[in-house]
Amino acid sequence: MARFSAFFMGLVFAIGLGLSGMTLPSKVIGFLDVTGDWDPALAFVMGGALMVNALAWRLTQPRGRAWFGGDLSLPRNKQVDARLLIGAALFGIGWGVGGICPGPALTSLVFLSPGMVIFVITMTVGMFVGNLLRPAVTAAVDLVGQTISG
Image (cartoon, rainbow, N blue to C red; front, side, top):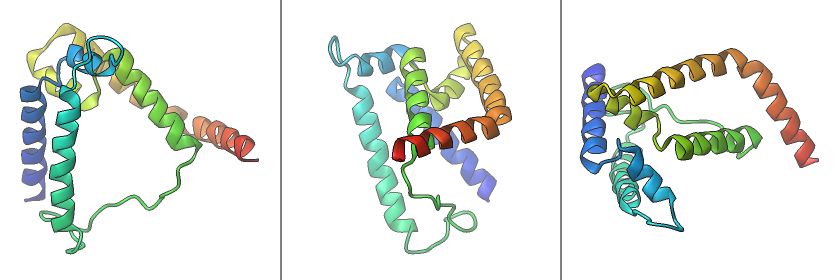
């Protein structure tokens, strides 16, 4: 049941991204262009997603268990540190430059657009290389964080 639930939620997510136009890099870039021809559509998509998530969290949290699976998997680290900030900045820069993030990119693969296929391949290679370099990057980021904090 957990796999079916995960597939179904992924399908709903993909359909939502497609219907909202968030698989189009021009929509994302239009949202990020706050000094030009700003397109607020992404703000409404994010707001709708936050409302659905808030309702789901409100119903699930008291149970202490996922609806179709085991225990809730929640992050234990609540600290905002250099690793989090640098990672968020890199993700945001990639999102702004490419005009698309991983979820919509994977959703867009259904159209087999050459640009999107190349994006997903390079994203996958980047994740693989990132995992290989994780120990060195983590050590460097931790060093920067220690230097900044004192």
